[in-house]
Length: 91
Image (cartoon, rainbow, N blue to C red):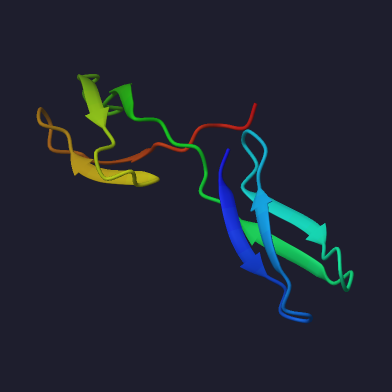
């Protein structure tokens, strides 16, 4: 769960908004002026993945050290460029 502090652009009230387990976008009404608001949260990410290169089937262990949603690199065996997604699928 993540908490973000936002202010309503219409009335200026400050709100602390939290998301559910895999919720990336939360839509809600301002409790004071009833404006429709939307807050974006960071998607849940894997810390590391075990993947196979689609070109040569080499098994790779990929770490997400910079906490990024994607990582682009070359397979050490065949040099094919790979793009790995660390975003966890919604349950």
